[in-house]
Image (tube, rainbow, N blue to C red; front, side):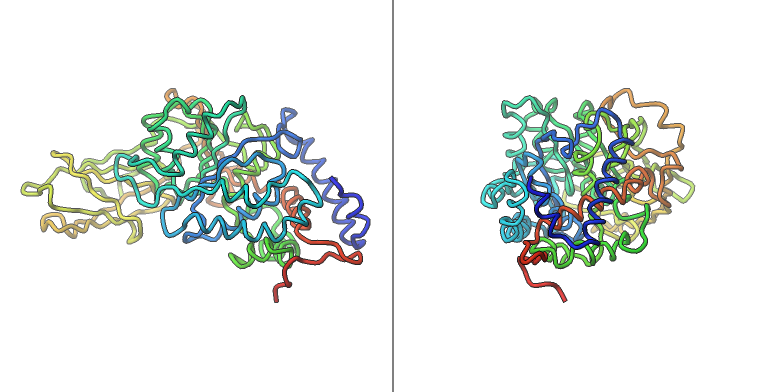
Length: 454
């Protein structure tokens, strides 16, 4: 990798930044477990990314930029559009368009960067609609691609990084359960889980031996906590180290002018850390074995005295009113928000399913074309799990990990986030050096492949 000739042309302040970066990376390696098999240590991991890029949150675009500047270190095998909203495959392509403009500069640093056309061939469209209460429906281009990748004759596991909906992963497991032993899943849950609760429910119920990290809040340590001052602030870092850094930098800033990158810890865990042990430190966090009893079932309308676990699954199995027929419909709206939970008529019961993303009181309202149901209200309280629950690992999900509930590892209300934020200077320094690769060097000065942002 021809870093030395480039470094000689850098300004003194930038050279000091490089020295600091090398020292920080060395310190992080020492602090990590000796079993570090991260990509920065030379280990190549197979990746399929399932993203809701182009939807309501700009962080997927930022995370895709991050992934592409590290693309020389991974074997990227699939980029699946798995939205719960308006995002589509062409939104992945728009980031690859920017990558194509920066590709000559990136290649001057490492010949392993995949060509833009190869990346475009890996883009697949996944599910664009919810599969309903079952959590599965019809195969998609995305779900079939996950199956094809998992069945390849390669001894390495397939790392499936779920940044959006879980529908394509669920469909792949439904259609080809034989692939389960090859998968290593990192699911950015929280808000995504709320939108994908039925697919999640299917996976945890029907495939309990799946290897999975469920990051409902830990991922927030990428943009919350650590040292957020000066150039390390979310806006200061982007202004100094991302803006005017090639077409990818421009794409990053156009999506959001400060740092969020909520999906990036799924990649960062494979850059620095032990990929086989989620309880060990990594740039993507450290996790606790999941515990049992995370689903709460109510068979009545509830009040503020009723509790359920935050980020768990909450089901309402309400007695079906007399006269309610198969032609009637009912939806439950939580805290006046989306998505609505569509009631499924099971004969004796109407079943609604939801996952609370915040520890708070959740009021709900039923809207129905059946007079006896329309306007019914209730509420429940989502509460954090007691710390001691993490000392009793699940007997049914032996390879499933979740945010560590230890209060000392939280950033504010976000459990586990400090296991990511503690590495903030390390991973941001490394990312800054990667963004420099998007610039060309002319007359000893870095120049962007695109005009600088105002």
